[in-house]
Image (cartoon, rainbow, N blue to C red; front, top):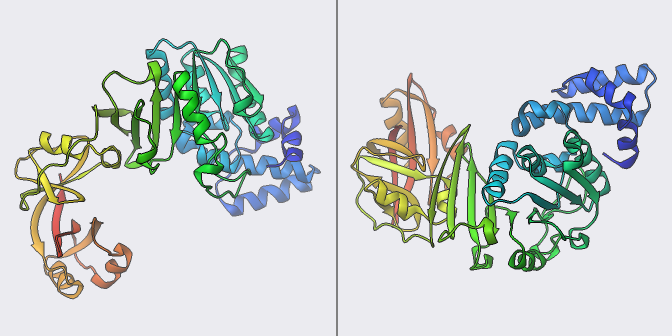
Length: 395
């Protein structure tokens, strides 16, 4: 969306037309809507804006639920926005620390600011992109003076009277649709500036889950977060927002439920052991936080192989921090022999998971020519140089 499209959209007639149009899910639906609106005499800018927003609102439901129906988006802004349930958890951290006002420095379309304002925390949000700031202002308008938005660079904001900060540095090229990742030296604001600010001001910074751990400051809490099976972000918390004696945390969210594992430092991995009756795959947040050893000890498990994130045990224990599988048997790792073994067992539905081996599951599936009414999970890994193919069932 460019400024001309946004100008056309942010009028009473434009917003009314968007609400009347309703959700648009497919390309064919979008094409028909464009033809219908152009035939009715609406301008090209307005038609492009309302049809684009109608499509984005459908996609945004996964992150914002029913709230998406009254929000505005850019494509890039939606992709980079924090899911509203996760934003609410961030906001809960600020509220628990007694914070009453937050400067959201790099607010994007306002996802995290919505979470803060929803918990009664005053928010001053800024974004360096004019269109994005205008969209954030629209999305936060229901909160009135409790949530203000300005078009500004994070480095220019006067933080006088602010209790804490929230930052989500721009890690991609500027734009509202197609963008690409940039090196950390090109972030806006820069990583060095962000780290220096967190030394003097309580706050949190949202980063990608694959952020270089060697660059995490020693005096912050690093919290990796997964949602519904995907590791989505790393948050560094400073000052009053960082919990006492916690430097590593893994927050696992599934639907409305959440579990967290915390530790004062990286946890040593458990010792390797022979294959047992169960194999456990730690959640991605646990792996990123290097807390596999904590989970292993709770499950009375060991590493199936050093440096590979599979645990194994004989105890019938599981936890929210792993996916657990009961091992049926070990099968040949050779694709031809594996295909024969699976057909002999009548397995036609197969989930394929792998760690530590160079295997393309889609290509392997084609080679297996699965047939039958049975279902199972195939775990592909290695111990040393020996490949393992384990037929298993989810617990």
